[in-house]
Image 1 (cartoon, rainbow, N blue to C red):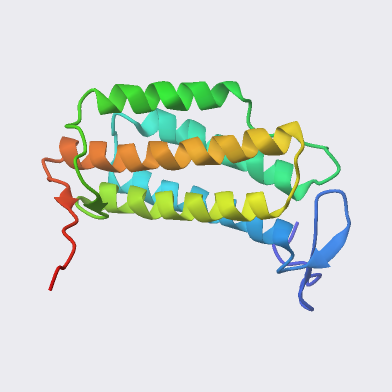
Image 2 (image 1 turned 180 degrees about the vertical axis):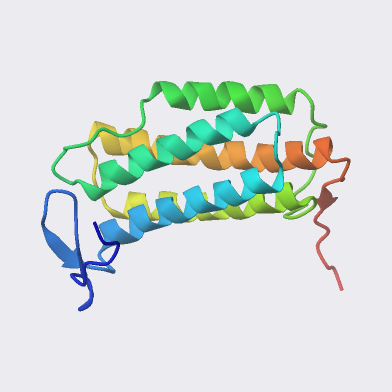
Length: 179
């Protein structure tokens, strides 16, 4: 099987199930951004080999493929990530937060390479969430998808702080310029 098909050369692509849409269709934008998020999580994992959160990040990447398939198949052919994963992500957030100092102000994204990558992933996750919300689908699976992405962005924020702490890099607090 060849990687190229030439079927998208005129700006269209196929959803799972066969229907053709333009490549900037809101559904394509949504699952394309979920794919981008998955790639940035891969970058974060590569920046921190053998991290204590690598197994969870691997599960998140698998969840994102599931969500991408769900978004790419508007006919209900695929399910979204299970709702139980949201509770698991919350538990992972709680575990990391036990090792962190409480936040007293906003922090600037950055720090260690792993933390910086996780901050980028967090912002892409927020964009993916906005694009999924824009699909204006009130079905239960879509609500689960939105809740998952919302919680995942929280997870990625805490994971970035956790990565900095584990690498001995202090978070940099934002100080507004009052000039």
